[in-house]
Image 1 (cartoon, helix red, strand yellow):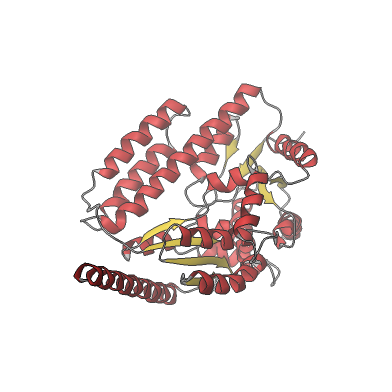
Image 2: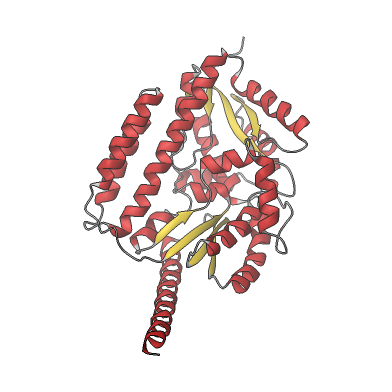
Length: 384
């Protein structure tokens, strides 16, 4: 008789709090991997094929640590899956082989994927995999788990947006972070009821707004594009959003759990059509991963008046490497600076910060120069 499964899922930023609630409502135990550190990275890197991309190595290290530390438990490892010209589709079979070669057999891997065309095949396939993941439950229990998890994801993302908005405007350095940490813990441990989550979110957003800050500032605006996992996981992108915010930047992330999920499940067809339209002449066909989104969101950031874009890519990511080449042309054609940053286990924080500071300084100088030009033109019109 098979033992009751404990679930492991990829840790991705702060969203783990919502996924914990999802499985707990369904009656399952969960172990959330720790944020990436030198030990988990060493595990993942030393046991991965050399050519695999960085997220694979990160997640392998996280899964391996949990399995090795809990030999008495049986695990279901939740793994995302994709198709197309991207190594993402090879993650699951490689995880399984590598872990078993290490003598770890107390697990099974369950894949979850988006709904891809043709829809008559994609929708049944999605639900089949979902049932394999969590089994059969009363409909209201499954709906409740999805709704609560969805609300917690939404609440966490609203708190994050508020955090990065307030940091460059706060009067006392660190005061916003302190308020955010309290808010996140309240949402994390909130009762699994929509009313409770909504109430706590409203209270904590109001509390964060009470942090002393100067709202009316004309700050440089930088958008973040790139591979979804690296964008959303602060422990692997060296907290790029927070660092930019402390440098006095209005920073915006293009991919969040909510829009990434909706674009691949609920509004997949509409999303694909929109990308093809925006990217026409640049990258209007699927190349795997989030490469198309990187090009599309760079163009959209320019249209929204942003001053620059940073592409966050894991080393070895084929779609983002392809997108990087196209972004150089987009940057020139649309007159928007683009900085591409590649992350792997060798990325050092000092060099990373130096590149960020240089880019931000350039953006600020460029913004100031454009503002001065506009003022001169305005003065010339008035004097005339």
